[in-house]
Length: 307
Image (cartoon, rainbow, N blue to C red; front, side, top):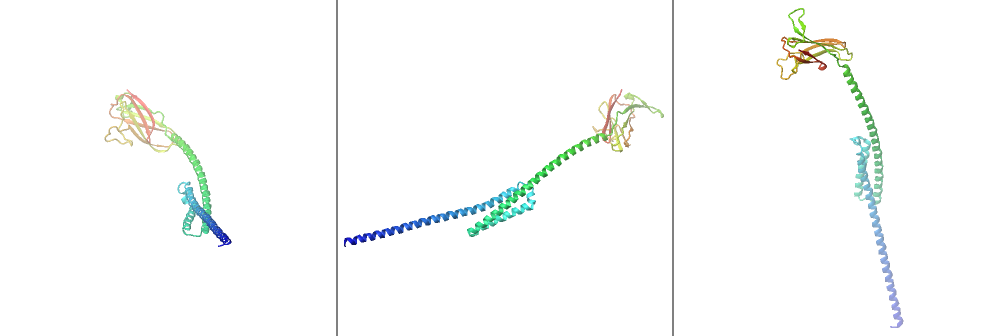
């Protein structure tokens, strides 16, 4: 083979190698570009999925925020407010719709559009809820303030009424000044059967005379008056009960009364006389304490001596 032929073959081989090298580089470059493109697409898909998931999560979070928002309202205010319940129901419906859309396999572009539209609507509903709750809270605050004011006024009125009631009770109470107390012994005389005495061994009658003072605002009508007398020994004198009847058997420690009477009170000054009469003259010597009781209220306490 001649030298020229060898040279030609060598050149041809180099050309083939160069061509193959170019093809290999082109193939590598193409694969690198394809890899980069696929990676970019994958990254974009991941970002789109993340974005869709974020939109869906925001809807879920706004629903929870809306529910939490209504808890600021006391009692069953939120449950009874139709506007609040309507907004919550719409957000619940949108959440359920989003769950269904994500599972449907819908075209990503359309899915993204619908999720964004739902998110915008939920944000609007949530803002409306915030405004409504703020409005109700402000209204509730005004009502609380008004209620506190009314409570204070009522307390003040009750206090005034209580004071006035006490004053009326004091003013309307029957007043009895110091009574006249006399003790008598029995005489054998029809014209003058009683004679004053201060001796215990001779006393058969204790007479208490007093005046119920004029009182125009006191309750008028029939009154019951009792006379209680405590002997120097600390025992009640007499055997009458609160209604003027005799105790058949005096119970141990029972309070008895010396005299009982009824009278009709007209609001004008009125004299009343109560008498305790005892057949035997065996009262002990010493100081006796008396108490006049009208309709269950003590109106006078006094005392007298028997020698």
